[in-house]
Image (spheres, rainbow, N blue to C red):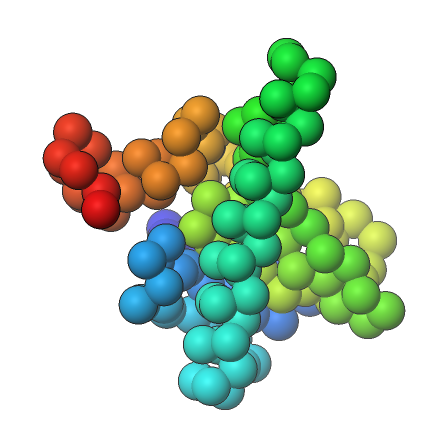
Amino acid sequence: MHIVKQLMAIPGVIAAGEFAYRGDRFSYEGALTPEFARMASILCRSNTVNVNMQSEIHDAYAENSGYKPAQGWIMRGAQISVCNIGNYFAFIENRPELLNDVMTIMRAKVGDVGDDLLVSLYARIGGDVKEALY
């Protein structure tokens, strides 16, 4: 079962989706309008880039700190939270144990993100990681 469908089967998951690292494509299921889903994919992509940049900076000052490579992030709001691993995201209600269930599935299905975020995400979409990415 695809990870998005598996996440959407959990009560309390509002929406789940996948975004392309390049920012030109996204897909989702759940209670989002297409415009909100587009903005959500942009938010997730930019936060993923920022979290990875911060882990690089932290590693430059404290080598082998365990922050690098960053595996994802969670943003908790008053009523909902956003979870992101790799290029998958989920909007969930803030309920006991829901975050653990969602993150367990995401970690099991997505796996570890490699040291180089660009290469790791590009390889997942079938790109040739040996070619120049620019």
